[in-house]
Length: 179
Image: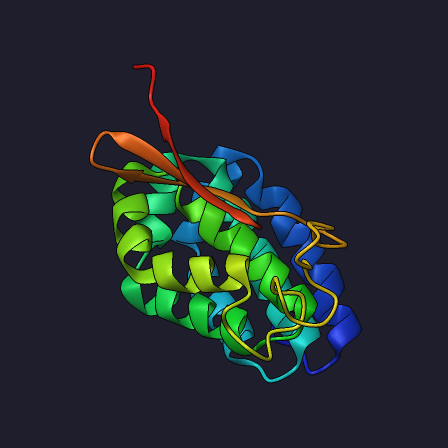
């Protein structure tokens, strides 16, 4: 049903899978039954509503446990999600950032995401990437007066050299770890 041509069927089936994915035991069963292949198929679709469904399932699977996040993660998947963030519609961008964030809770994944996504996230957060609706500096995004984004903010913890670098819309700085 997730691979149906009917967007409404895909949406409903994806909501069900995403709900199941919230439980680590059920998430593992989904992985064992090739749910990741279905997610890849959804992400490859041209319809943004279908891409959002795939990202929602991916996000919930990644959040279920570190083990599952590590099992899901690949540089190919990361590259596809980053492409969706760069080129997708607003809702696709938001869900893509959420999926990357949930994949990044796992320490090994976080190292790879840091290398691959740092420039994308910094550019998006600071509005350097022209034409990305909702990015700071782009139409509807953050203005010089500090109004902030209308619908969401991003705070990503990127571990580097014993400090935590915080990237947040409109602010890039360092916060030393107390551990």
